[in-house]
Amino acid sequence: MEKLLLLVVTMAATINYPSAGKLLVLSAAYTFESPSYSVVHLESDFEIRLYKEISWMSAPVHGTSFLNSTRDGFHRLYQYLHGANLNSTHFSMTKPVLTSISPSHHGSSSSSYTVRYYLPSEYKYKSPPQPSAELNLQLDKWKSQCIAVRKFSGYANDDNVENEKDALVSSLTKRLPALMQAVENNLYYNYSIAQYNASKHRTGRINEVWMDVSGFTAEGCP
Image (cartoon, rainbow, N blue to C red; front, side, top):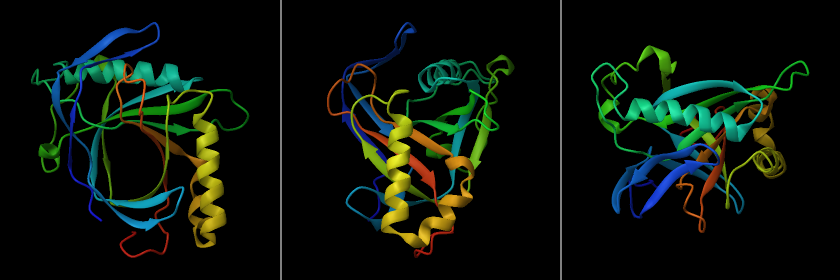
């Protein structure tokens, strides 16, 4: 089934992180745009989605903490959204805020993180304003790909994101042996955490683990 492109929510909330102060106040009635997708495979504890091309503005972070890296990257993206770009353009907030994680190699304690803002669909066929150089942001265009998704509730933090990723990998390899090669090709199990709620939204929170499984032999998967 096709996912609606626009998610409409009514909320009054403030996005913030511990010790980071208030970053963004959302109005009482706000329309959030999200990337569209179709579900190509569904299980009780995960699904595989086909996403078409997606454009993100991305903030690379080299850190040791998911939470701190997400805070750092989102703070820079926030500035871009509020005019720190060549045209002083202001952007609407979209969902999800995506933090991609490349686990450390060779025994290093640090990992590479990339925090991503989904660019509205009007930028599908045109380039967005260039970010201010000091923000160290980059345009990141994803090709069409299949992504395995596991939902989880509560707050995404350093205590649970890796466990949720491991649970997704376990489900994929047990339920769909044909996916084993696609998972193994995902070096060191690179994955992303999608967050859909403002930090002040304490109940009914929606988070997802994303893992690229392109190569899975399902109709529509590249």
